[in-house]
Image 1 (cartoon, helix red, strand yellow):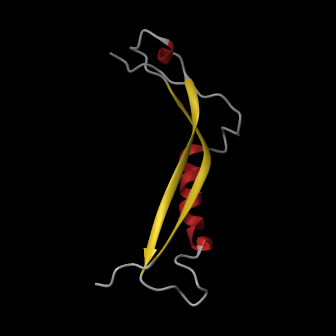
Image 2 (image 1 turned 30 degrees about the vertical axis):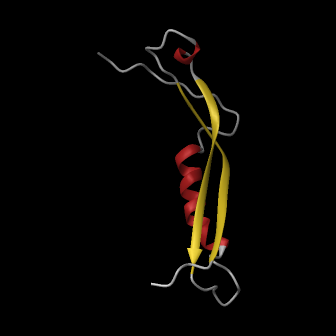
Length: 88
């Protein structure tokens, strides 16, 4: 198999999420959030007809999946999130 000669990457960022460590004695016991980023790397032995390793427009389904995973219509950007401690 030929060694890939071309590479590129695509980063999707700005996916809010939150959590809490309810058993933690410090600040982590409170709900806190952050923003996730995901980077994908691609390699190819040759470029496509447009000169691309991968056409980023073909990643729309992946980007939509990330958006569905982290942002829901009932939770607009900037909305707070809550968690519950597991029931015992």
